[in-house]
Amino acid sequence: MKALKMYEAGDKMINLIRDNYNILQSLNSFGISLGFGDKTVEETCRANNVDTTTFLAVVNLTINGTNEYDLDNLSASTLLHYLAAGHRYYLDYQLPFVRRELEAAVGDSYDLSHNHNDNVDRLILELYDQYSREIRKHMNYEEKTLFPYIEKLLHGETSTTYSIDTFAKHHTEADNSLKELKNLILKYLPHDITNSNRLTSALYFIYNNEDWLANHQNVEDKIFVPLIRKIEKELKTGRINDAISAFAGTDDTNTGETISEREKEVIVAVVQGMSNKEIADYLCISVNTAITHRKNIARKLQIHSPAGLTIYAIVNGLVDINALKK
Image (cartoon, rainbow, N blue to C red; front, side, top):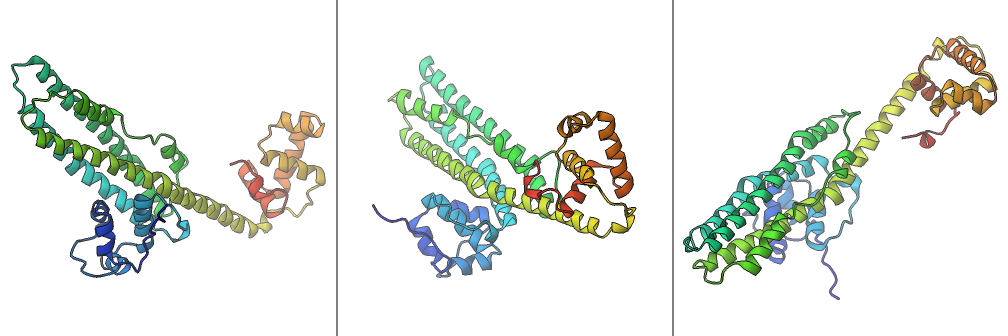
């Protein structure tokens, strides 16, 4: 079995294109202009302000299906630009182009006095329009919801109502209308069509569109989602650490009274999300005693919220931050 060629920064861009002409579509989405002469991948990317490592990650995944990359070295902003530009290419150019080809091939090529042919003609175009609507709906959602969220994330803003996992959970493959359309053309189109060359060409572009969309979604699933998930985690951890650091400098707000071992147990129980009754049952004390302990803790530490007690517990080694519920 022939070993897969992994493209590297020192390879010439022209050789990469010669080996894999489908990468031309990726070049456009990255904003890389043609006319790069004998420049290497790295030189071409640098000239077009594109992160080389991110470009190669997408290229090698697209060509070889390999996702051997280090998330720490990828550029989220480069990927975001790539995905957004890909949407524009697909929605504004590819979908209308194939629609025109199909309409020219089947809409004007039948003897419309034959109702059977006319019905197939309409069905082909209806199926394609159905597919186009579904794809537009999917990509418009990403542009209005996902992409603005990522932009904010890259500026250090997080959200309590949305995350990349929300997107990934509902990120499904493209509608099956394309497969149905291809089967209809291949199996049932009347053999006496007068413009078969144009229909064959349109069918080829449909296959090409399907491949492009599969590659686009693969980049989202295998590179983009893991990278954004990593950024979310880093921001969340950074905020916790900042809060801990800030809290560590507020010892003067405490009364100086010692926290008893029993009160430490109550603090841990509160951090774990237990109610007063659950604390009482867990520690084999009455509910009133549990409430009294919590009042004493609040008075001694001047901390009145579970979030504040969580920070206190982490700073003082009462709980392991990695063991907390996410």
